[in-house]
Length: 146
Image (cartoon, rainbow, N blue to C red; front, side, top):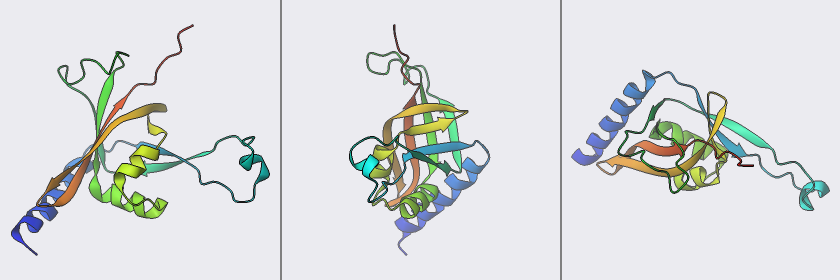
């Protein structure tokens, strides 16, 4: 193991330890797999189903005023979700995804305190070429204006 890879592995262990302190329950809402041979699903009559996968350990916090100024033109409030890279690797394997970017791209959102938040941005932080943390920027759901 090279020195850089050793530092990356150490960074991953430190990140996991720090994230465990939060104890927050956060769920990643994913579309359920299609049922092969289901005629109602094939013609679009089936109600879409979802499955929730727990993200542990995580830290959920509001973005600082300078970073949270405006979400596009919507003015929606934004938060930052820091997720253990180890937990994300476990989920990508369990759910059959090739990468974290595809996993977060396919997700319907993140469920925090029974509120579904939209994933606006997902990045991976690395040390020594080893991913140790995923940073998700999420925003509140858009409200219908009548």
